[in-house]
Amino acid sequence: MPNPIHDELPLTESTFFILLALARGPRHGYAILKDVTDLSEGRVSLSTGTLYGALDRLLKQGWIERLETDEEEENGRKRKDYFLTHKGRVILIAEMERMNTVLAVARHRLAGGNA
Amino acid sequence: MNVENAYGWLLQLYPVAFRDEYGDEMRFVFQQVLDDARQQGRFSLYRTLVKEYLSMLTTALNQRMQAAPESDPRLRRARFVTRGASLLLNLFFGWMLIRIMLDSEALYPGSGGVWAQAFPFLFALPLANLMMLVAWRWERLGGWLTIVGGIAVTLTSAYSLIITGRLMNMDTQLMIPALIANALWLLPHLLFGMLFLSFDRQGRRGTILA
Image 1 (cartoon, rainbow over the protein chains, first blue to last red):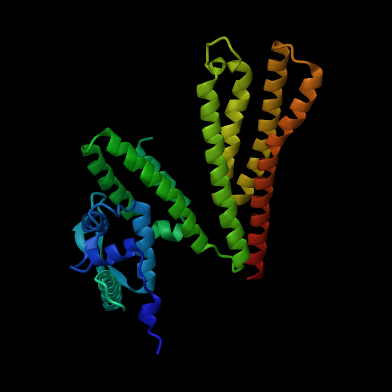
Image 2 (image 1 turned 90 degrees about the vertical axis):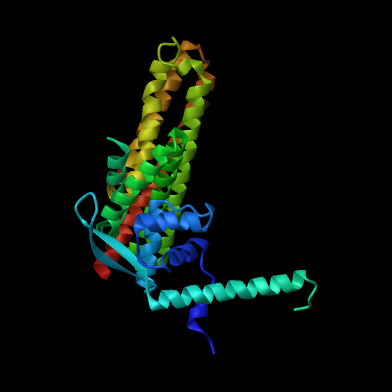
């Protein structure tokens, strides 16, 4: 039976790191940007435009949600945080399992196995 | 205009709905990214600015594609290809102009060369090319301005050719083919201008029919 979650995989590297950045709790835009750079050890460095394009897509897919916090930005507007939804977390875990499977097969083959 | 204001102004490249939703946040994040880059030195600042502005062009184009009201995917694809091609042409002409300016000492102001004769052309070419980018946002206006810009480029180039030809006592038999070849300047501008006008017309028809 086809699994709709697997149709969404594999994730792009930037999508994966954005979801991973939100896995520990809500973050605002700049914190996500920094987290993605740190988590990827500098390999993925998103620009502001790319980040918000991705956030917009993830919001529409229902993988993340946005909430207004009580904290204010410098311009006086309420700061907005993004957080992972249940669906987003399921997708993230599915992607990690997919990567694990790929890694297991590769390790097995390199170790001389036939699988 | 400082870089932050320029960024805020360039946010207009995005569709209105996207800008209303994320514009303020993007400006705020851009400000923080710039503050970080400034602390790391001038090189880091320039690199960040180039990255942010270039990415702005591509992501704005992408968002516009997604927000395009027309239902015909062929029109959407044609727009995307044309805009991409116009951007490449702009980059090529920009690179060519810089090379011409750097390589030819005769084009330096005050060098006693042909700066004065070449100036109208050197001014008209980037302006005409910028009009192609204007057409991304306002297709009809940008389309017409691209065509008018192309005519201006062709005329100013012909003017430069004739004047410098006279100064160098160029043979008339050589001048005529050179002027004919010069008319080729009009082609890309005419082509892109007409494409943008056509997209505008088709887009309107689609909106009316929808």
